[in-house]
Amino acid sequence: MILDNGAEVIIGFEVHVELKTATKLFCPCPTAFGAAPNTSICPVCLGHPGVLPALNQGAVHLAVRAALALGCRINLLSRFDRKNYFYADLPKGYQISQFDHPLAERGAVALPGTSRQVRIRRIHIEEEAGKLNHEGENLWTAQSSLVDFNRAGIPLIEIVSEPDMRSPEDGRLYLHSLIRTLAYLDVSDLRMEEGSLRCDANISLKPADFEGDLEDIPRVELKNLNSIRSVVRGLEYEIERQAALLDAGRPVMRETRGFDDASGTTLSQRSKEAANDYRYFPEPDLPPLMLEAAWVDGVRDALPMLPDAWAARMAEYGVRAQDAEVLVSDPALVRFTDAVHAQGAPFPEAVSWILGDVARLQNAHHLPYGEGPLTAPRLARLLALVQDGRLSGRMAKEVLEAMYDNDQDPDVIVETRGLRQVSDVQALTAIVERVIAENAKVAEDFRTGKEKALAYLVGQVMKATRGQAEPAVANRLLRERLTGGGSQ
Amino acid sequence: MRLSHEDVEHVAALARVRLTPQERERMVEVLSSVLGHMEVLGDEMAGERPLSTDRINVLARLREDRPCPIQDSGRLLALGPNTRAGQFVVPRIVQDI
Ligand SMILES: [Zn+2]
Image (tube, rainbow over all chains, first blue to last red; front, top):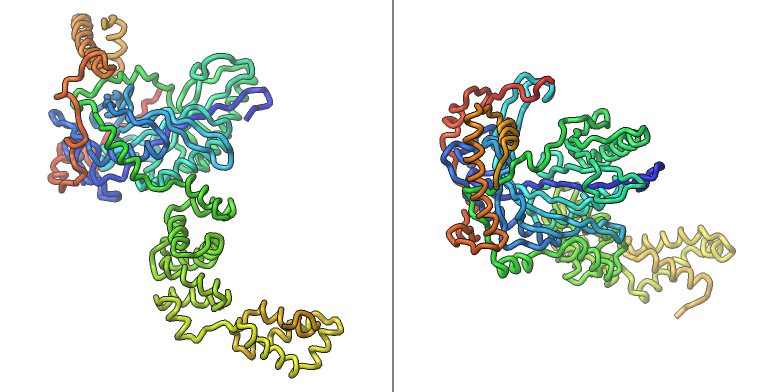
């Protein structure tokens, strides 16, 4: 995105993702969401003197899984460091993080619908802070605050992108793609509104005549972005604000600004601390972490198929791109579709049923895909009955609905309801000839050009077969008899 | 690594610590020596010095991700200087400039 004054928009993200472990990063306190305040705390996560952190194996595993899925190279030797700062939600006065030897580096996220990708600079492990509840309208008016340390010490990964995005839309695509990939791994709840995924954006404008290192352009770190929509709005506002400053010949300050959802504007929070103000130093209580290459390879081999690969597979089988996009947005949905295909149903037919009636019924029954009465084998069997011509589309819908009500196999429902499509041409031809004979007047009307008369005759055939004829076949046979062509 | 007086003053300000001139002198020595040890660790990480194996965490030796029941969270809360509604009370966070 190049602005009117020639400046180019430069955006990068720092995304924090809470890992879905059973316990905290350095102590065995449970991570259960929604517990009463300060009921999941211990001397370690409260930062009492004399305690020692004990790194959670499960957190390392999930972090490595996420890093591999995002194409990163895992550093077999990584180290923990203390990031020192004062804030009421940080019990120790420092956060245990990773500074110059992070867990993973050099990954990439593809921007869907484009041929571009956003490089990932690094992914590191760190601990979550506590939660502040301000006693007042907000941070600014509160005279005191309450602290709940249940969240303090929950494992996080921070995913730092390179400044490769050039517009708020790029930012939206990046987050969409990142979240979608992580959803396949089941490493996090990924709920932006609940804070289990948080996103800070770095944004700067590169003047047309600027030459040199992007790092030297003063950038603004945007916080308090609680939805993808807020991210886009916050970035759009910042672009306008910074462009106006540049146009007026005034400098853009390097600072942290908070997005205010209500006004759609950003407000200065504090001038940004430089990295050395955090006085990072190696965490003396935690030895460096050494991983074995074979173990990392094992984690890589165990990764599930990821959305980009799924989309490619769908395309191979003739699924339309926009349908594939919907399918891969939900891992349960794409896995269910694939399971139906594995049971013998052609992909395009399966997809059109799944995105249509199946989606409607699963939603109506509040069921995730693959759960409830509609199993993949049952849907595949239903589609096979349609494919064989034994059920019409309308009958299949009836059977589908009945599966949700009765939890029975399609064949049982077909049997008990006596559903059977008359598509046997010979049997149907006899009925068609009888209908024409019994409705000579209407048949004559059609022959003399009244197209509408045909619909009446089709209706009569349907009636004679008690709805079990395939209307398209009845239509074709009637037309053939009445126009004298194609009689066999 | 050798720290200057200015370095020590800056770090003291970030740490919310006020130092007498004598303390500042002593801190230049103490902190320089601590940072010297950090350099030893740094060289180990950079592969310039062999890692001593007792200073490495391997995955198998890490804590398993199994929760322990919480005991005494009430007692831990009571250690706070001021509590209300099951939470620690902290004074106003932002300072008026
Ligand atoms: Zn704890």
